[in-house]
Image 1 (cartoon, rainbow, N blue to C red):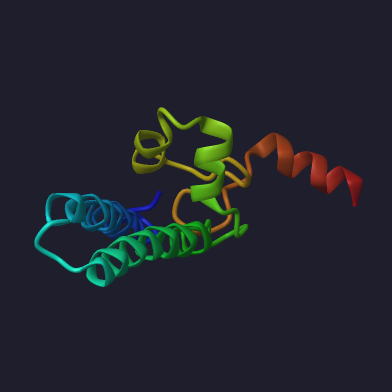
Image 2 (cartoon, rainbow, N blue to C red):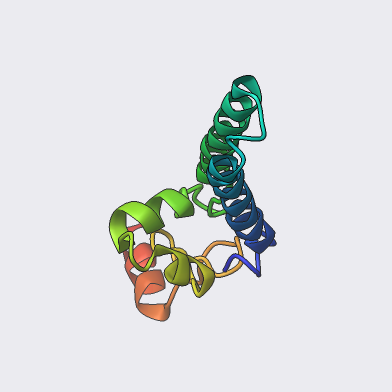
Length: 119
């Protein structure tokens, strides 16, 4: 679904940014004798702010275009921390509305008949 709705790139930006932020935050420990304390502090805070910022951005931006379900949030809270990434990459339809490409999910015959009978 993310590929069909042109949102897969957001997940890749998330992964690269998180890796870069973690790398910058951890890399400073190898240079603590070479760099000044202010530079080390700036690297640590910058790396952490990048990770927090990209997490918030991804949380808000990966959504179902049809029902606006926040898919990133759903994948972490409902699917689980161990499998959220694989689930999100392989997602075929929205778990809330059933949309596959951002358009409303097709209604089957039985649901159409129920709707007509109620009117």
